[in-house]
Length: 183
Image (cartoon, rainbow, N blue to C red; front, side, top):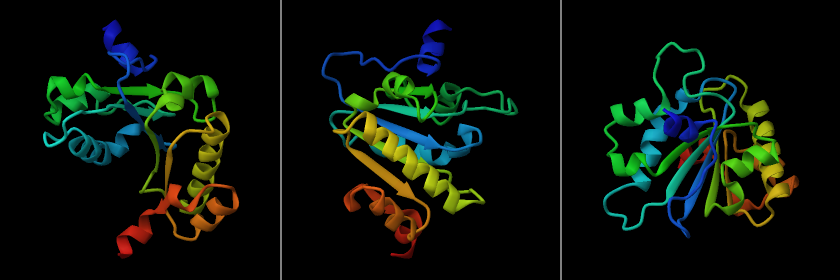
């Protein structure tokens, strides 16, 4: 149980072996993190595909618990088991809860040493403009705390890219989900 707690929510990302690479996926949402279930499963299917030689560790960082409302009664690791992820893959995945604007919490998630940090919005939001603004702010916080971090910011609306650019985020670091759907 202690092992599970350190890897799900309250813990700190620590690689099993020195020099192991990891990526951080920041789930930018005001609701329970389990609303990202299909995206998380797809992301892990791709990154832990058997065609890849070296799997990086993956840290999901969220401001909310996986099952915020307690309705499903499932933890993040229950979700991984139910989706059929093998034990070897599950041991390379962390779920950490923290404040997105907290340097201490971002350090717990290993953002400063990550090979790549993704910021993923809630694609079902009713307020895409507000969420894009909030996620741009989060990207700026990460960039301010970790200037050398490799960052990818997913925005919901194409016009938000202009705001991101004006805020100092490079064009190559952000993309719009709706723009991708149009192509």
